[in-house]
Picture (tube, chains in turn green, orange):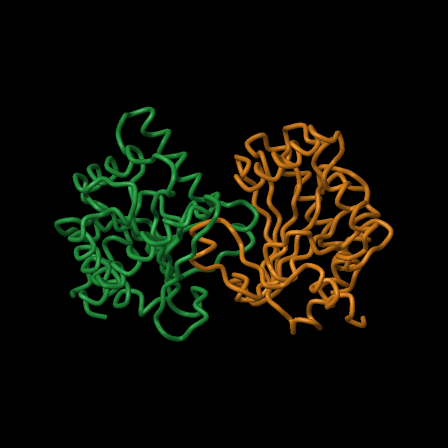
Amino acid sequence: MSEAHIERVFWAFRERIVDLKRDTRFRFILVFKNHGAAAGATLEHSHSQLIALPIVPDFVREELDGARRHFEAKERCVYCDIIRQEVESDRRIVQENADIVALSPYAPRFPFETWLLPRQHGARFEEAPRSVYESLARMLKSVLQRMNRALENPAYNLVIHSAPFSESHGDFYHWHVEVMPKLARMAGFEAGTGFYINPTSPEEATQVLRAVRL
Amino acid sequence: MSEAHIERVFWAFRERIVDLKRDTRFRFILVFKNHGAAAGATLEHSHSQLIALPIVPDFVREELDGARRHFEAKERCVYCDIIRQEVESDRRIVQENADIVALSPYAPRFPFETWLLPRQHGARFEEAPRSVYESLARMLKSVLQRMNRALENPAYNLVIHSAPFSESHGDFYHWHVEVMPKLARMAGFEAGTGFYINPTSPEEATQVLRAVRL
């Protein structure tokens, strides 16, 4: 897809979310993409999914709670802190543009897990300025091209992380996109513990992705 | 493997756990088996894994907390309650023997997820009477044969759920074995929520497994 086309897909997500928020049954909308059979895609053609839920999922609640604890301790958004520290150290930055920073998180669950964070603080994907979707589209295309070349077109999951509707998360939560190539399988250890074994350091993943010539 | 051989594998788990418990660094031991590449097995030959951890994993903590809440409310072990109710209703019982009840849990995360529960209450796998390992081996062989015939030799994960070492869980926790055939893949929805979509009801799974002629 062209960058303009990817931008229109993000805009379609936004339009659907804005409309679905008018339905008071819903508390949270999850937007995600499974690409390739190994990542659980059940359709051959490229597609994304949007699921509106009447409750806030456990994993979302845990992430919100963690961000809230950081804010209570520091009076700063943890994601803003991550962006500032990572840009300064430059050890895990895959790529930057005017609005988006793509990085390998400090403690990735999966090899080559990559986050796309908007520089401008905001709790919800659907409230971002239109120009950010354009920057996000360009960055996503670039990150996926890097993964495709470095990792030979891996299957992947992409998840938009955004705050629930009806609660106030404006100060401490910061929407972003997580891309997880499916290089290893979840197995008994992960199922039994909730812990992840990741043999690839984020610094190594960053080096590999940065080295790709686009 | 013969039933006697499987029993010796369980006994080996027990012996290793009893020995490792003498190392005061460890808080929890996870025993699990990944069978087949789709379930994350990285060796061709049949094998199990035992990992001693210096902390109690999140998922174990959540299960203990749930069992503790039930005990505080009812003054009964939730697993003893499950066994009693399920045996009485007989809608989700796959098979029973003198010591072990194999059932489809009421809210399974995965199609054909099957739990093997000892009838006799006890928090820890390694503290079970020796005769229970023999019954467990017979039941596991039978359950796996049912799955192999009904589901065409599926990949699976098996996890022993047992209480941590140094805390008192004797009243409210109840060790058991969970077997999860790998028929569907975890994808973006599960990764983004911690929720599971399972298209197979436990009653349907039970009927299919029970109908297998051994």
